[in-house]
Image (cartoon, rainbow, N blue to C red; front, top):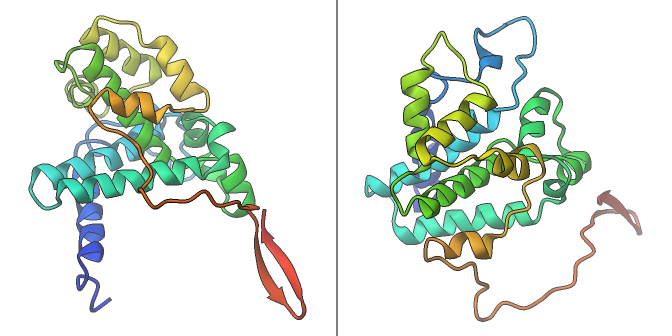
Length: 235
């Protein structure tokens, strides 16, 4: 639209998308899960690692804007808060793992089913990527980060090779000297029930409600007027 860059928020949203696609120059264009190597243009390409292709890219895009001086710390944390809130208000987070939502991408649906049963490879993958990054940084005293994992994928699994979950776990072990199989099982293969208080505390952050915030009772349903009746449109 003509005035798409008029507001600061709209401008940052566009630049974030541009940063996302720029990161794909490496993550996906140069290395990708073996379910996508080579592409089959006649059939679905199944992979349980689409969260690395898209969610991790979403995680890195915000850092790219921050490190380039395009966004501020306050804007970065505002975006992170939105991501956390969206996760906590998605019932499907307790039902479907990020690996499952990657594999099911071809049949993911919106509406009640999507929100109550499934997650999203972008938003959920972003938070699992953050959790892995913080865990690596914490356990290595800041010497190893999730960026190092992607550097290794770029170095060792350039196309036409592909990588799978065992390859990523192998990289994690070689970088950290620790076995991440149980972590992977808990946060990738099973629904990621993330403890944000503990996680963020490791990097000096705190997830808090504003001083004036109040508890509000909600039915978690949506309705629309239909004559003199209210018709439920979402449960």
